Image (cartoon, protein in one colour):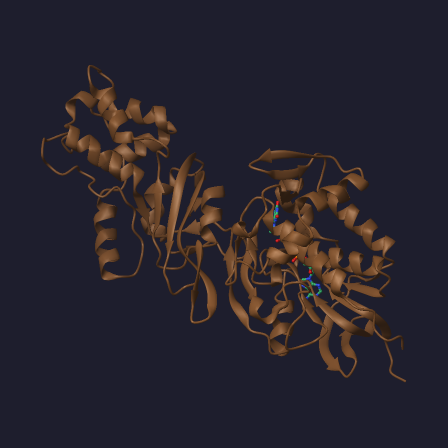
Length: 466
Ligand SMILES: Cc1cc2nc3c(=O)[nH]c(=O)nc-3n(C[C@H](O)[C@H](O)[C@H](O)COP(=O)(O)OP(=O)(O)OC[C@H]3O[C@@H](n4cnc5c(N)ncnc54)[C@H](O)[C@@H]3O)c2cc1C
């Protein structure tokens, strides 16, 4: 007689995906145990969306997910989409509203989402082990045995739902990845994503003064063909991957250490060390034409013209790089004082040389702005080009402590897309953020957690009763 409690399913991780999988399986009559090491339930749901949980996005489709196989999430999303989650909220009387571009938030607090999931688990008579740490997981002939703080737990099937490693201060761990690896599953290298980007401190120092300045920009990034980042899916060597140009029209925020804001968080999921980012600081405009038009018959200064476009602090800083104190405002035909309009940080010799020239023209003081009428057309056109094609080379990210998610995770090649079961380890399932499926900012990550949890919960089987 073997010791320990016996279940059809053990789910490790009582977050968004784990609770959903446990509730669905429990409501189908399976004996489910849900194990979590945290003392407080579902912290990431609680803090999400500024405490109101951006729980889904009306436009959710595979196009908003980054993965080595962008089609992998299709089946789960089709099986359980935003409308299904809204039905669930309706059943529980949870009020919500749309904020921005299909992003749905709770009217009250994210606690109501946690409560919905807790109640759904109760309906499914899910057994709880929390707080409870899992020391080891081993395979047995008819399932898995978990050694935990609360003794041995045996289950015919195991669901890994411990999410990603973002915000380790909330107890995030790489448990799912370690167990998956032990059972021979391949892992796509995990990285912080939806994360601020940082720059070399010395290089950024002049821009740190712009901390707090925010504006809408168009950000773009080109994925190198080899890195499998994002954009248009392609097929190489039999493996699906994504290459191409990715663009976001979103807000950008200057910080003490670099760049943040929704636009930067979005593009960070595609960015790789060494990559430049291209930023159009006047999106949707023909800035050259607008400046030339403003020039004719006007006594307007360049600072006034740019301040109409941007927060004044940015206009001043930009002009300080274009026209450093003491430099002549214009000399027809000469290169502008700040020719490149770009900030460089990187390790190559070219980057170092450019860095050196950039520090020489960092913003120093509020310039006396030249009048538009005093500037040659050619200089205004070149200025507009630099503003609409600002190129920056981040040196890193703010790391997992500041990231909203981890990208990468268990390779989708290892999993069945309908059940999230591992091909090479029957009975083992992986759901949620631990899988190499990362949503854009805007409610997509929770939608993946719900959809993958439901797909898994529907496919789990009743084991033989001990
Ligand atoms: C600050 C912040 C804000 C966010 N806002 C949003 C948002 O508004 N919209 C959105 O779509 N996404 C948002 N996200 C992302 C979203 O929270 C996650 O993608 C989602 O929670 C992933 O669900 P999951 O079930 O896979 O993992 P989680 O919800 O993270 O759950 C994992 C669970 O596993 C437990 N666990 C971890 N390690 C172990 C272990 N070793 N043993 C036992 N248990 C363990 C944890 O305690 C946790 O309860 C946000 C993330 C952060 C950090």
